[in-house]
Amino acid sequence: MYESWGVGIAVTADEQNGTLRPDLFHLQADVQYAELLKAEQEFWDGKTESLLGATTSERLRRHINERLTGDPGREWFEEISTFGDFTRGCILGAGPGAAERILLTNHDGLRLTIFDIAGDALSRIETNLGPELSGRVETRQADLNFLVLPPNSYDIVVSNASIHHLVNLEHVAFQINSALTEDGYFFLCDYVGESYFQYPAHQRRVFEALIRATRLDEPTFSWPDRSRWDYSPFEAARSGETLEVFRRFMDERVLRTSNALLKMTKALEKKPASRAPSLAGRVASKIRRAAVSLRTRLLGSLVGMESIRRRSAAGSELMYELDGLLSDSRDVIPGLAFAVYAKRSKAVQS
Image (tube, rainbow, N blue to C red):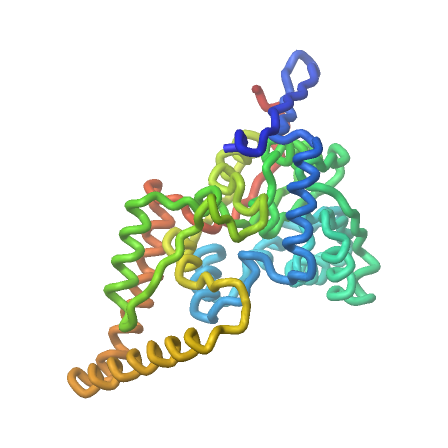
């Protein structure tokens, strides 16, 4: 996967009490890595929403909540307080602040250290939390791929939509496990679907057939292409390996998944780079809209608009139902996971 980046694999290990403790790096901090990292930072400069944090419909949000927490009205981070009280924690990746605010509100004695490579993101979260909460938060700018955490220091570690941007997963998992106290927990909510969004051909065909069967217009699909990459350099680089790697370093206590099919809707929502359309483009767009409108009216006169609406609604519900079934299946990789891990006291064997 990394051969095209021209980087090596460095392995460090320490002997401790006769047990080999691996701390693996898939990337070295060399010149080429620095260039990729700069491109990653420039891509995200000024952006306030990640791939997972983008605004979603209320129906989709409720579906995801029900899959991850069992309650359509309950967000994943609201589950954290059910695992006990926490006093010292860290966050890997600065989010918009919703999860951090809930954590600090539900745990009066909690102090958080937030790590992120983007200084702007850290400043933004301090502002979003406000003075009443930011006094309990410390921010540190750091590259999570090479982050070193203090051992036995945190009774809670949280990562929200940041791990899928990382490549040194083994190193990060090792550091989190080492940093947890004996009764500590690591909470993960992230994209865990196919790396680089490279969905299997048969899965794409099923998705396309379902969309065509349940929509009135003729959809177009734009599947992510590694030769024409429109995302950041590290986007979903090893996302498909996340759960496997973390299971090797920590004890998985909870795993709830979603978006086995819904992850693929990105192929429908993808938009070209923003630019003013040409006159010919505007005319063509109007013609397409008029054709769709005419088709809808003609169909409405034949079978009735209520029937059309029922078909569209049934197609949407079918998508959600199939998404849940496939998310529970071992044959399809889910797109989203909420997982809880406990510290593994015994050192991991290589």
